[in-house]
Length: 460
Image (tube, rainbow, N blue to C red; front, side, top):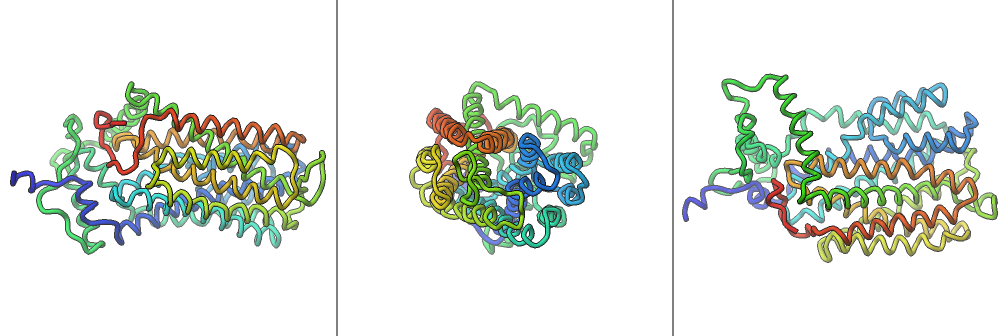
């Protein structure tokens, strides 16, 4: 019995050290990544109308530009796009920005693996607040810059956070959970010792052990002090094989149902979110067209667009608060279902044309609820997948969400501009119903459960 007291697992170590200064630093770095991505994505609400006016784009060309801008994360190409001499060069530069898209989900999964299980729900909501801060900051920045300067300045200034990420990249630690999963407990222990030092806490007595049962990857488990470390080419091949192995495991008998349902959930969530964002930029009380109140947004000096987008961006704050209150009390699944139903209720009156004030209020409520569901979904998905495939599973699901976000502008811009607001709103309602169904059909509830390191350990 004494031998059992001489070893401890990663979860036991994180719980013993609690959430302290080290996790706060990790939160700030990962949150900055989330903040910068939100800023770049929000650009589509402001740059689209301005570019359409400057270069006389058709609705189809504006939709194409929004289609590409949704895929933005952050990179140096964001700055280059500010110098685009014409429409096609802008599209191409934003495509280059989209190359960094795959890095977005990693920030969330990486931070998640530093958080003790008892703190996970609350702190993951706090992490999601960086996205909300990014959208509000971008709306505020656009309000100032677009009314005084032009869209080129907005693109340039919005790229600054991505450069800050690059500047501090070398200081970011590897996930100790990932290292333990690879059997590299010595390297993981070094990071845990740093956490203990920063948090002024103590590790449990004994020796750190990995929860990983298989030993087939022990060639990676040997630390950098081994006499015969793998060559760079061999490491690259091993990582390439590991990535493909993780991807195909998403379709294993135990996970295929969950994987497909998560794809539907993320597609529908992103589709709904960007639908609300784009509807906000299209509906206003300034000018009447097709019997509706459509904002004439060609003049970037008109403050109506910035006011409405800023107000609805603030809706994400109560959305985060709502999700924080209920996520650890009623569970992940029920939280998403409740907020999706509320989102449907807020959008439903928009099937007919409403006053500008009521339209803004309804979109405020819808965005609040959709933001809450995305927040909980972003906690839920990484919790479902084991460490060996967490980034892959969540990243692919997030990619399905990006597809939903890319398709949405074709609907929001095309249908609303084409005087089909009712059809657009009904389509958003149907998509949300599909999201609700995907949540109800999922067999996993992750509330209060420890993260798993392998597929065999998963349980509904």
